[in-house]
Length: 106
Image (cartoon, rainbow, N blue to C red; front, side, top):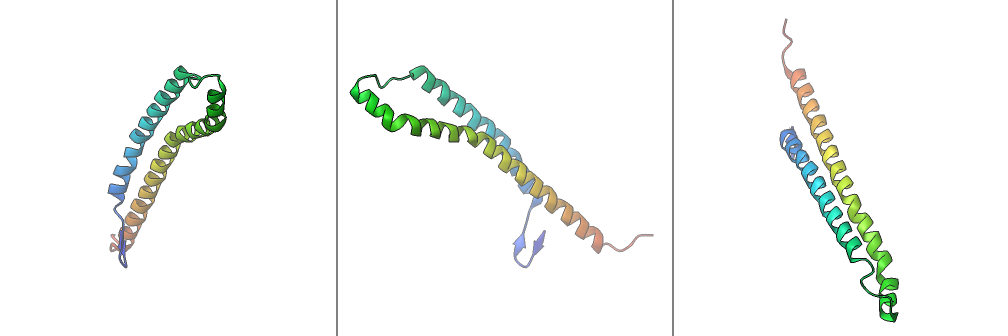
């Protein structure tokens, strides 16, 4: 599909949209590994004054970051779905336009 310098390749877009499923799965695996490693480490900074100070400064931010990383898998999956839907829309518009340009048969 092209028009005044705009070009789209719905087949290529659909192909690359499918790659996001694997990326989302990989992000989910990495998040799971990170979560397990952090759980195994526990409160490794200690319970002395320095450890408590470290925890006060960093634990909440680390927990929030882990939550955001956990959302990456869903986000990548959503992007892939949106790309696939966009590719399908472009394909359908391209087909409809091609059909409109064909001479009537009959």
